[in-house]
Each structure stands twice: as C-alpha cells, then as structure tokens.
Length: 316
Ligand code: SF4
Image (cartoon, rainbow, N blue to C red):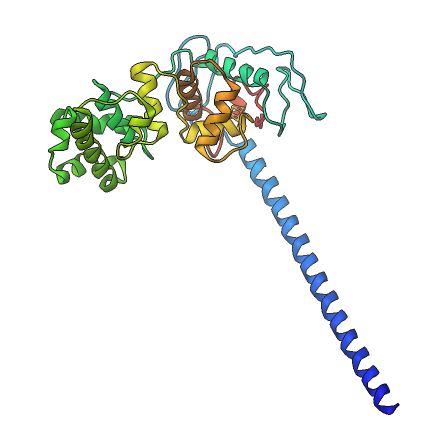
C-alpha cells in the first residue's frame, strides 16, 4: 500500500510538471506569435505609408493623348487622363472605383476589368515600341540577351560599338571572346553574357545558316534565349504575337490581378486567357513602358498615374 501511495505521488508530480511545462511552452509560443504578428502588421503599415507618401522618378516621355513630362522635381503631368468605362461591378463588397474595378481587390481580374486597364494604358502610351536599337533580327536577338538586368539605353550604347565590329552572326561567332567581354562590360554580367551571345551566334551559323529562326521552339534552343527573349524577337521582327513576361510584366500583372502566379510560363498562360486574340506583343510592350515610367517596382507613382481610379493596387 505504502509503495502504491509513493508511486501515485510520483506520478502526480511528474504529470503536474509536464503540464506546467507544456502550458508554459504553449504560452511562450502564442506570445511569440502575437509579437511577430504585431510587428509584421506595424511594419507593413509603415511601408505602405512610405510608399503612399513617396513619389517616383520619371524617365522618359510619351506622346499622344496622355503626356508624361519630366520636370526638375521629377513629377508627372498628364494633359488628359485615360478615361475608362466598364459596366462590371466590384465583387466581395470591396470599395468600388469609378471604373468598376475593385480597389484593393484581391480577386483575379475579369476579362472586362483587364480590358479596362489595358485600354487605359494603350491610351497613355499609343506609341509604345521596342526601345532597343538594331539593324537586323540577329542584332535585336543579341540586344535582348544583353538587356537582362540592364536598361535599354545602356544596351544601345554598348551595341553601337559591338555591332560596328561584329554586325552579324558569323563575325560574332569568330570574334575574340575577351574583346566581346570588353565591349559589353557596361551591361553587367558580361562574362556570362559574352559567352552566351557568342555561343548563340555560333549555333545560328552551324544550325540555322546564320539566320534567326522564326519559332519559339527553335529560338529557345539557342544559348541565352528563353521564352521572353524569343517572344520579343518574334513580336518585333515578325509581328508574331507573344507575351514577353519580363520583370515589369510580372510585377504589373500581379498588381492588376491579371495573375496570381509567380512562374513566368504560368503568368503567360493567364495573360493569354485574359486577352484572347489580341496583339500580345503590343500589350507586353505597353505594360513594360508603364513599369518603366510610372509603375516602378519600389515606389509606384500612383498619385500621378492616369489609371489610378481603376487600378486595384493604387495607393493614390
Ligand atoms: S495606380 Fe499605382 S500601382 Fe496602379 S498602375 Fe498606377 S502606378 Fe501602378
């Protein structure tokens, strides 16, 4: 009996200790979670506020109905706002903007909403076009490869000298690699880029008789050429419609709720479904122009953006 009592006491003590420990653990975990949540919330609020307050820089100008002017204070003036009408209603009881696209909405855009946003952008940039300088499809292909992580202006400076020495696939295929590296150095990642453009030129010579192929499938077999590059070349040179899902198209497509995807191929499929039968090359370039001129990655210039009344991501 004495033995049983002792065992019971020991068991009770062990159980109490274990429950106290477990309770303490849970409480610590919960309080840590609460602290993290609170801190995340306040950080998010603070950065949202910072973005709202800030105004972006403007580089470049557009012509036509809406004009973006660069001033010393880097503000944007529009002479006429893009007017967009749609009859669709915002869903989920969210705040509705005059254009009918839900403000802060997180639902995937309908075709009607997407069309309204694109209409606004097409009116804002009627002359949007490829800003790379080239004299042939080979030169455009090489310039697009060089444009990764680099501005078109910088690429144009570099290719002027590069094409003066190596104007076609055959000359670049036989070029001294160190010379190519020196010429393209200002575009960044020049070691990899030099190897890629030369390997690309060599494959064009050996497999395609020095000519740039005209299908995405063939183009993407070339070194340094992905779907984005292939679609730019096919769209600009051959007018073959295709989405060029670069960093701007990825970012803005998400801001506009055109897609929820991260993978460029999945984004491309969403965009194809949202804009069936349209000039995807023109739409891509138009979105890229907006990403470069107003809808910046870090501080989009929402207050100066002519489509801020229908943009779901507007902070204006
Ligand atoms: S309102 Fe802001 S987030 Fe929307 S398109 Fe314009 S700049 Fe981009």
